[in-house]
Image 1 (cartoon, helix red, strand yellow):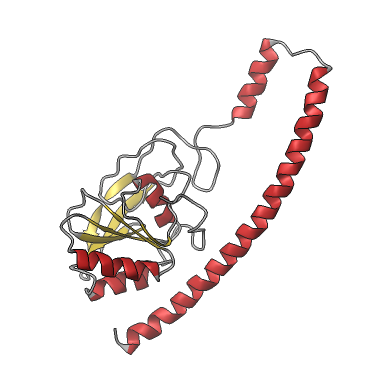
Image 2 (cartoon, rainbow, N blue to C red):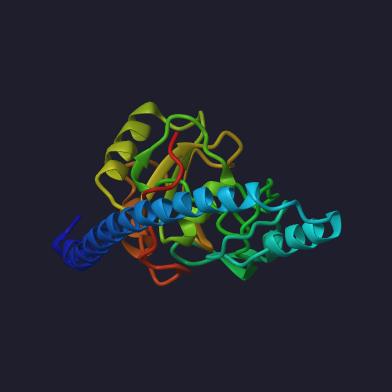
Length: 242
């Protein structure tokens, strides 16, 4: 690529690296908090057990009420702990721009769900998703990943590079090398996609002819942590691996 492209991508790369360092620091702090909280919980359980031994059980009615209260709600927006059993995607359709990028026009829901989601496109570019994201810190997966986890990675600003069995092996290898050196990306096979090589971001998608297609680098430069990201700077590590 020429110098113009390099100048445009360097600030983005520096910003991504800064966010990655901040996320790593946040995770270290969280680990300390979790360890401390676990110690408090264990102490509480020990004390609670002693009290329980010296008291008689409550009646069934009280137990039922307490259980219902502790259960909470079953559904939640992204960023909360609840999860529905099934999901949806919203409504809309793709519009293809002059640059070949397909943009989803409509709504894309962002609920956390425990079960499978039927997406209107393959690979999906948004919609309800699993509470756990697929790790996307330059991750190359040689086996298919669950759509519901990958969509959560897109919500965090990742670009998902996918291919089917019609993609030349040399292109797959070259794209894998590109992904490994690019934070906030992941790559995996998707057997049912309509084109050999595709790139997806939240609400955006395009086909490329191969690893050397300049549109691949353009898509990465525009959509890795791009303005379409619902949760910019959110983690791409600490989720689900393979």
